[in-house]
Amino acid sequence: MLKRAVLVERVPVPGATSFTRWLQSAMQQTWFYVLGAVVLVIYVTPFLWMILGSLRREVEIFQYTYPLTVRTFVPVEWSLKNFLDVLGISPEGKSFGLNFGRALLNTTLVSAGVVASSLVFNTMAAYFFARLDFPRKGFLFLFVIATLLIPFEAVMVPLYIVVRSLHLQDSYWALILPWYASPFVIFALVQFFGEIPKELDEAAIIDGASHFGVLRHVIVPNAVPGLVTTALLEFQFIWNLFYWPLIAVGSKDLQTIQVAIAQQTTQTQVYWGRIFAGSVLASVPVIVLFLLMQRYYVKGVVMSGLKG
Amino acid sequence: MSAVAAQAIPQTRRWWTTRRRGHAIALLFVIPALVNFAVFRYLPILAAIRSSLWQYSLLGGYGQFIGLQAYVRMLQDPIFWKSLQVTIAYVVTKVPAQIALSMGLALFLARENRFAAVVRSAIFAPVVSSIVVVSVIWALMYHVQLGLINSIITSVGLPRIAFISNPDLALAAIVIMMVWKEIGFSMIILMAGLKGIPDMFYEAARIDGASGWQQFRGITLPLLRRVLMFVVVTQTIFSFQVFVPVYTMTHGGPLDATKVIVYYIYQNGFLFQDMGYAAAMSTVTLAILLVVSAVQMRLLRSEVEY
Image (cartoon, rainbow over all chains, first blue to last red; front, side):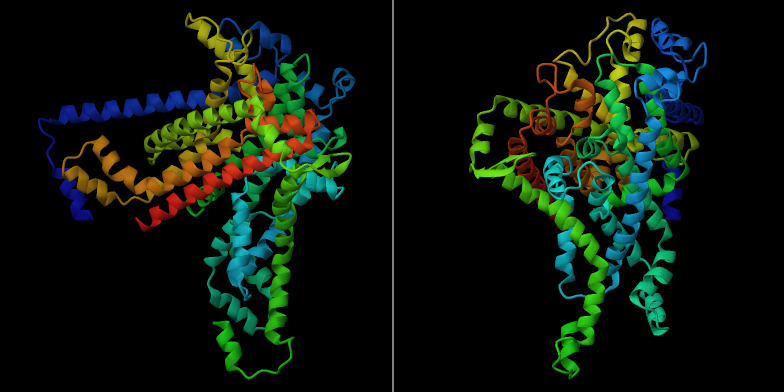
């Protein structure tokens, strides 16, 4: 390898002097930064517009749209009114019956419920597939993996029919139960568990541990990164879920934050400031979590992509 | 293997052996998950088929057998065909655009550089953001009078564009937004694929004097085929089921220009109270997507041999 690198170094570029080579690399660098900056602007602007827009009065948003200046983005007078409105704290918000605080609480409860139950049941199932002895286990694994082929949004209406026939509609159960196990999470955890040496289990079993003991004291402590990754993906999935909570739950007290925001756009008059504020409340937690734990996210996505 | 072991050890004739007991305990670990998949993933498929063949309403439950009536109606429903057409138009524009752009970005940003890392994070941020938030914000950005995009367009002297209320542009507007949102996902996967290609191939090609484009055609593309194929498969199936942007931005309009199939199913089930028809359309969509994945799995498998 090393020799090859040296060889490449010595291949003469026809007619290249050190100056033209310097110019070439400088141009490449500039090109990289310019193009990168353009991409960055395209991606950051909508978020910036949303966050700064949530911090100014609605009149201001409209007043400074034209012409395009700094004021299109930066508030003249900073204000938290939109947040007070959507949280139902200000009298105006109250009169509209807005209660995004409740919606955020619902979303948090449902996400926490799904992540917790999914950590328990998916981990158990993955342990079964990775370690335990059972006749025709491959067939059961196929039963699990085949569910990955079922198109998600296309079966929401039939899922509603099932949930309704179980009399679970319009309850927290409807939002949590369908998601307490996930084929993707089981699949990913089986891969993670496979990397733990089997000798560790065997030693624990010789020491008299039960299957449950092995799972708790050997597998789980050794699979923390995998568990964190899948928990993060699961959290983000449930937090952002829209179609299912839209149809599964009718009463306003059980509304999730995504449904509450979408509802703001279906009214005859659209209040931009409130939409901005609601969107900030809904997206800031996931984005902050993502920035803090980016490595896990990327690992999870790559896993879904390369091993799927 | 375990069967051989069981034969080798002369055991009692009792049915409840230690091994069977072990299996029973093992089964306890997987049963909760299996129940979930049976009830919430497989049962809906049966429910869809059943409620499409019998008369069904949310309040009245199942009524008399109507056979294939709902399916016949579907074949004669111009809006159903229109929605299928809109969905396919969405998929065949969005998926190639997304994959080409994310391929470009993956190649462009796959370097050890602080700035590249920042740009990568920015591109990935919409992937973790909710589709509701993204589509609501873009709906405001696209606004004819007050939207940010029109503010930018007019500042360089161009006329305003009615993105969402123009039937010719509405679907394109959704495609652009969704490409923006989901590029990060395919980019990360392609980047991981790029990392898996050994450097020595490129070095050898450079020694032979291959240009950047020749290297891409001759090395990157063929070695990345499997990953690319996977991204195409998942994005096709995923995009076929687009719903949220249509719900929040256009409600299927204007003039049904954005009425994708999943939105039409939702409309029938929950706005027109026609669950049976919605179930029949769900069944057809399910069948279409299962065929698509079966075909593409075939292609993937042949890739492995290659």
